[in-house]
Image (cartoon, rainbow, N blue to C red; front, side, top):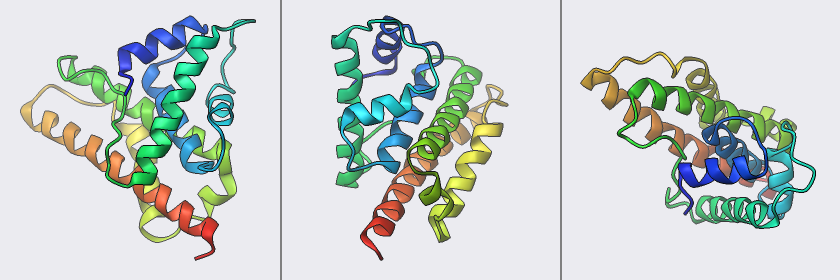
Length: 178
């Protein structure tokens, strides 16, 4: 799977401003909200808020669309094999926490663009998980560099991965009628 640095390079190649983490979250939200869509549709939704250059590289767009397919396949497999594209563990904790907050913001944005009605219709654990993701989006940027904060950050990342999977399943169940 693509890593955060490669995605940042691809986004720069199509003149997309913003953080790779936020874009990855938006793409994941689009995949959750539109699982039956084609990669181009996810990409269009995730890129809808940014200005692309007049003729972005087909190769760059194809690689980014491939990431959407990988995300959807990982979510459908249900094995929590996907990872959030965040800065490496060697990056300062404050940078990683801010990227996690941006990832969560992107996820909420992508999900709302894909299917805002379904997002509002989430119930139970999935609704609570989505609310927690929104809270993380607002607060994850406030971190120091203590060992306890490192542990809390790792737990938040894992929580978000599980929350996204839960939202994906609840939306799929809602589409199936039960």
